[in-house]
Length: 361
Ligand SMILES: Nc1nc2c(ncn2[C@@H]2O[C@H](COP(=O)(O)OP(=O)(O)OP(=O)(O)O)[C@@H](O)[C@H]2O)c(=O)[nH]1
Ligand SMILES: [Mg+2]
Ligand SMILES: [Zn+2]
Image 1 (tube, rainbow, N blue to C red):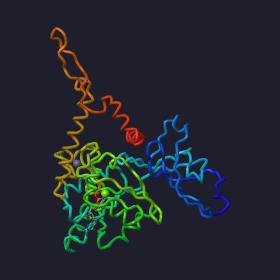
Image 2: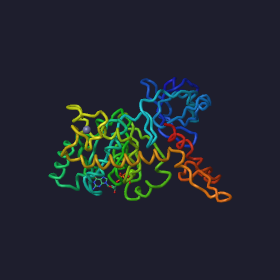
Image 3: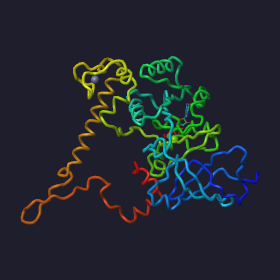
Image 4: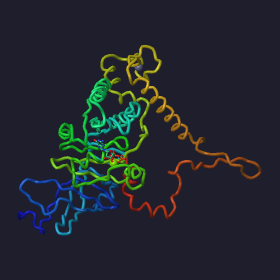
């Protein structure tokens, strides 16, 4: 142990928040050449000054920890560095990229479902690494066909098998020194890939995790796992149908095929939705155009619903008052407007910080 790392040294240190639990933050300390610290992680509170400023600490935040207590493994977060990005679901700051995982088989690779995940990932504006797992379950010709098809869509997938350990070197490189969120359909091997790169983590793998993914705890618990060569991976619980939290005018930016077409030519109308407008350069016989149309219908309907609930009259229901007069009464249609019960509040205490984080942006 060098002199600097003695327990008496309370020089502030820099680190990354890797987990949030109630009002405690697990901080992975940044290595400093020549300084050998007794521990790599500190369990931290947040300085009250940050609380007063309303500054939440998120998983992924780069922070300054003051008064590190090297014997008690404790510290206090005093500063949060400005965020480069902020994902809402899962709530993680400074994510550099999304590793979107699918399996070539088991579960069956469905182009429409894949498109939905791709569009959701694209809507974050973060770079996407598309990865197909379970090569061992498909013949080479099928693998090739999928690779070619993805090229047509504008992606260059990395094909791997965690079972036979094929293709993993190609995946390792882009993960280095980055914060990567692993997302994708349930059962494709997200937890398995994290276990491969970070064997100490030992995440739950297999059919059980599907049930877990729907559970309260796993869906909310967000944690970063450090890669041996630098960088972090975040597991997410698998789900089958991501919600498209996206505006109709954003949708076309989520298709590389459309972005490519719009680079080469312009539609006549700047607000063209590429449906039946004259002189549209996007409408055509490319493979995913029908998927674009169906997602557009969905997000347009979603928008219409949001607009409806924004009109005050539509949020009230008519109630028969005295002498047959009708009165407007607010509808309790979404949970958000209801006051939670005391018991529920107590149950939620453990998750309170994550709840706040989710409402942050
Ligand atoms: N044949 C084969 N099976 C694999 C491979 N990788 C993972 N599996 C299996 O696929 C199943 C699901 O793997 P998980 O890692 O739990 O998948 P997940 O994406 O984390 O699933 P959720 O947590 O439900 O979202 C497990 O039974 C794994 O053993 C592979 O390359 N080939
Ligand atoms: Mg999993
Ligand atoms: Zn158009």
